View 1 (cartoon, rainbow, N blue to C red):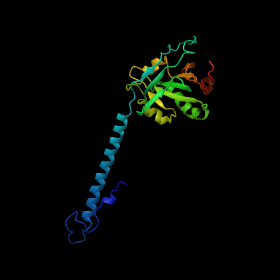
View 2: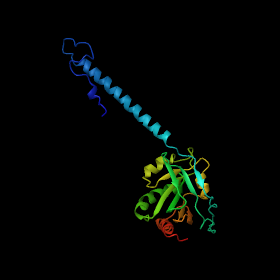
View 3: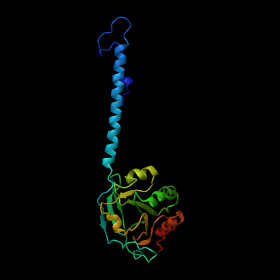
Length: 229
């Protein structure tokens, strides 16, 4: 247990100063000692806080290497064109979370919804709090959730993504994409946010980009669970 300033004040009769002189001045040395201890304590607390903040920032990589296993998906088409990725195997991704732990987004094995987010994207900033409230109670039990912080740029607003997602209470484990956006390229990301539904066999059943309603997100969750394309 850390000692308080009061714990460190010398007791009466201690040898922390010269004997008190006559004339009722026995309080001078203890009061000076208390002031010094309180000042030292305040400096120590400030130094501790600064060290903790600096250490936390340094220990949380916002971009990290990503290893891709499997073929990359074609880029997401625009304008309602047919999506060539539907029915193709989703690649597996290996990397680290925004807080430095190892993470794998498997290609096959369990149905999943993979969400790509950019911290500076206003559409992502609107979508995240909505899904933070929606996903925990509405995700099918047999569907896993993953998110990937991609297109990360320290010169753009709302950086770092780890602070943004923590502030929002984001409930989904999040991978840090690489400096060259390896994960985003592997999944054919062309806009943000982007959602990729993958069935238990590891095949893409749906891809959507942009702000989605909760009903649209639910349809992707259900597609991943059922394997319906």
